Image (cartoon, helix red, strand yellow):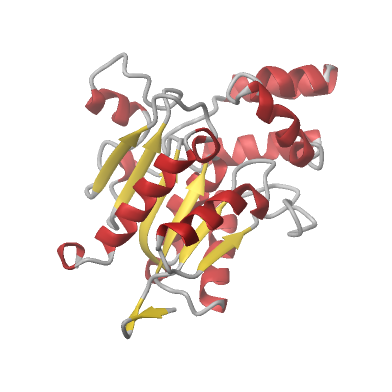
Amino acid sequence: MTAAGVALTTIVLVHGLGGDRHVWDDVRQRLARSGVAHDVLTVELPGHGENLPGPKAPSIDAAARQVAARIRQAHAAPAIVVGHSLGGIVAAHVPLVDAGAVEALVLVDIPIGPTWAGDEIAQMQHALATDRDRALRDWFGAICQPSQYARLLVGLGKLSNDALVGWMNAMKDGAVPDGGRALVVPTLLMASPLVLPGKKPRAAELADAGYAHVARLQVETFAQSKHWIMWDEPDKFVAVLAKFVRAVEGPSFH
């Protein structure tokens, strides 16, 4: 799409674990009303939504290559890639597998360093096998608003225990190395207190989350949100995203 003859960057939206492209329906509508006249492309991760069947052993890099391929197929490179949760880790790997596919990154409430430890995954695997309903409520219920849990279960219910554990292992193995040093594109982290609790100096918390060496990092915190920031503070989310998009397309970023 163009405005005044100037090509506008496509915004690519990548959902989190158990989600699908409809996670972003409200964001798409709000972006359109905000005056951000960009093409918006929603991408579904392997094994989610209509992107079936899922892999037996999910890989962050493999998922990132699929996102990059979708961007290329849509003739949208380089795009601004927005990823929430698992989708954020995948988004962070897209410029690592295809540098030319990405103009900038927006990573929504996710560390890009180590996430799950092996013993945590083993405990979750046991919990899912023992009482799946309770395990999901303990996991997802703790990071979402109570009114959101039934909505999340629709997507989570489509994922087997093996798929859930597989993606946990993929996240464990998919940390961006060296504090994100390889991420050289403009990067915006939108973080709830789940990622940046505000209990330590900001630099220390960013390092804990894997962002110590992301050179062109901006951070916006959402104190009133849990994990689904775009649902909890939608007006602020879209305003911050629109501001970042305009800045990326401005002369100071080039």
